[in-house]
Length: 632
Image: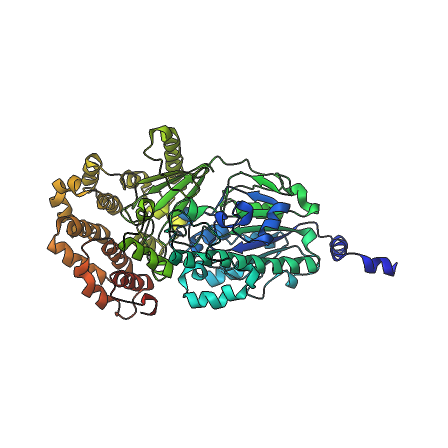
């Protein structure tokens, strides 16, 4: 008998232990990687990638082709992940901001604890909420780089998260190349390194030796990540737990390269996503197992209620996502709504809709390009090379477009145009698709009462007395329907739109006037020239965001000297948000040389907020006045 017990496999012993301690609920392991799009993973069809561990999970589990983050940058996507509430409801879309959320909304692992689970996180948080330390403590039994399933009580089911940062943008582009060599490339055996000539370049990049040198970082960083995931899964198996653990693998948002991360298109939102079910819990997969591929739509709003459902817990009312696996599963969605707002010092407002085949993105501030001036991109060698190639006229039409103003709308056939090279928004053949997605977006904006349509200074003010989540529900204080009349025009161009925006400037509502002026910022000179007096008068508007935007238009389009002085003054405004939007306007002006001295002075001001300081550095760096922006 002793000999037979000795010969039992480790996994069999684990099953016996679980039976003895009456563990009936599945363990759940999340394997999270950063800044990675499915286009760069082997199981998604990339023959140049070397991701055998991830591929093996997919070959034995369920691979999702239509999984999406709700945001395009870490803190926004993780806010939705941890709360189960989309950022445009919660007010957490700006990276990073840390505004308050209601006390009754907990990080979803809190509800797993109530269902008997040991919850551990190793170890990234970045939840983008106020009082993050207390929030994190309540969310997890343990959150540290030493946390794991090994500290739970005997027989207790666990929910464990492991976050791998080796594919993060810092590794693939931002950190110096020497850092990458030491900490990524030289950590790989020679036979596992991906050479600079062994992959296909995305068509929106110049296929040159200089760009290939930088882009190889993506492949090698993902390879290192895959190796580390393998070590984690080996530990799970050696601990006798793989046979009782559901493994969920995904990335926190799209690829950390220019045009991907922070940009509101498919490349920013879509993520690799795989679920592996052990034999004992295969009944919890509605799709089957063993290499199944599903095109079911899933986004990060769904993960919290799905995990609570798996754990047998009670899904709180504020979570409106789908319970997409396990018992009592929700019906599939026909579309997903996503968002991209301020990222670091790069202000933006984008709302997107996908049905898996098409990606529709509404750009409410299209006067800024796809590759916006965001500091941790501007300091990278790849972005510097792109700007150099642009200046040297080495880019083709598609590659140059990344630096142009965006249209108000993108519509991409992401099923047949995976790199999003052809905008179909103006193609009559796709009018039905366009109209459907426009309607879906409008419905969601009203149903959710999108609070992120407010300028950030308003959210700051709201947060002193309540939460943005709660404030948005008050129709008197937040007249969204009236505000959206101005928002909905912003980005569309033409004299008929200009006339409506000019009329809205007479509103007594500050935010309506703001969006009317934001819309005018995108207009062509010929269409706004007849209204030069109205716009210049608005430079004295009592609401600073209106006055700043009017001044930016008046200076850029009408060469108004008073506007120039106004902009210089607002650069030093005590309200850092007003200073930030001012510098954002200056960065995208063709005639911004007169502001060099202003920003050189501003960047040395004591206690300057980070976003304002790095905007100064980016402005000066792109004019060649600072050679090493990262060190200034």
